[in-house]
Length: 127
Image 1 (cartoon, helix red, strand yellow):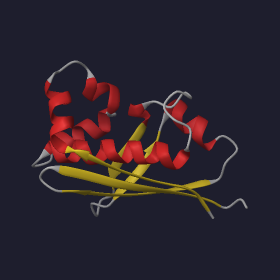
Image 2 (cartoon, one colour):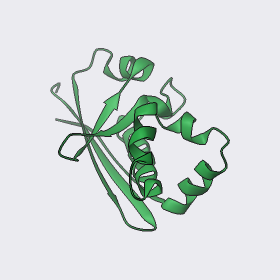
Image 3 (tube, one colour):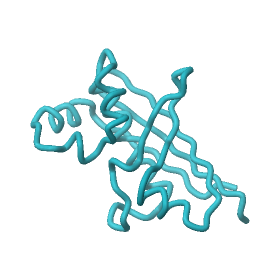
Image 4 (spheres, helix red, strand yellow):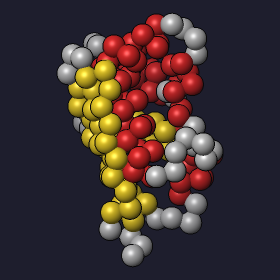
């Protein structure tokens, strides 16, 4: 059963500007694992933007907003060995989201030169 669906789109240049300011935005929003992954990409800003969109999409699907103890950098978008993305929650965010819930998380990312988009579906076995 679908628990929630979220989608988001963002301009790559917006994320690029925020990261280039070097004011801690990157570390506040992205986990160390995501930073390593994005920095290794050919166009790292597209990768950062797609992950940012996925975090926004997750919050829409989960329907709780950013004020309920969920941290940006505790929502990781990583890649399987075959390149496909997956959503990994860590630390307090993982505890909060999965507390008493049996959830499956699905994410898809896409980007072009100027835009990145993501969709998240959260499934539950509960009716």
